[in-house]
Image (tube, rainbow, N blue to C red; front, side):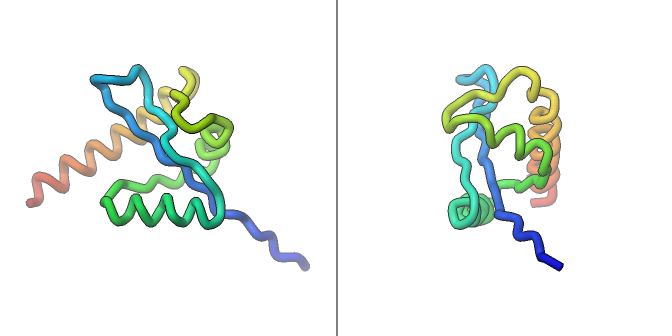
Length: 93
């Protein structure tokens, strides 16, 4: 029996409603680079969302590329969840 080794992957998105039409891929990588992206997110208290299907689609994009329109809905759901979590955390302080 062989154990399947899955390489860790990570993608970071950024969205500034005042400056961009859609979220941008600002970092992506696998293995050690993915670990660094995740560690940086944790240090900066950035929410991490695990979604393998979305990760696969976003991994095809280049850094600084806006997400395509067909991914707006999926990414919007993640951003809405993150904003809600941040809002709840602010209320608790």
